Length: 250
Image 1 (tube, rainbow, N blue to C red):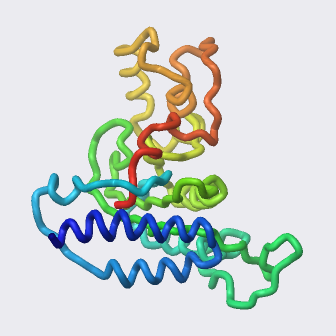
Image 2 (cartoon, rainbow, N blue to C red; image 1 turned 90 degrees about the vertical axis):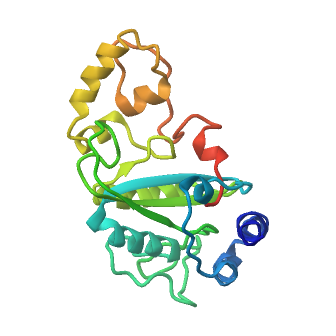
């Protein structure tokens, strides 16, 4: 009964109601988030992985997740929080965010060198994993921390995700291959020491490009320079309806 109350009533129905309320009244999202935090409290569960991770997902959202060198994880979280709260315009860490009553310009941007805060009804998720040796794993060759940001369906996600991605770029981040990001093969190549080994295996195992599409052309590069497949928009992320559109709050 306890698991049902947490996984279904609280994590889905109550949280979904709070997200819809925040979408209607974005200015109230900080207050709503504090309420959700009090309702959720803190818990610790130990069980088989299938019992921990397999639960209903009814709240719809889109997501971006970056893997970072583990030692940069705390800095990354702090800087994302600064963005959400209204951080410094120059992107440097250490800003205090938007102050209550801070004057704004005619366009709504706060004066004094800070961004307007983003209306974000979701928590930031953080996890860590050990290094591995898969060629294009986001944890290849380094112990990694993962920082994931989300936006509720029907709310503007791109400005927030682009701002977060700029932070992750500075910290050596690698985007989750199946979630939102704006990277291309040109920007990803240097982040993976085994990039060329992967490309050799790709050409050997799929010489005709049967497993290629516009998205893989964008993030991995075309198998053949003369490939004329229609371009994939850099803002599209994974194909519409993919993992970033079907998961829900965890």
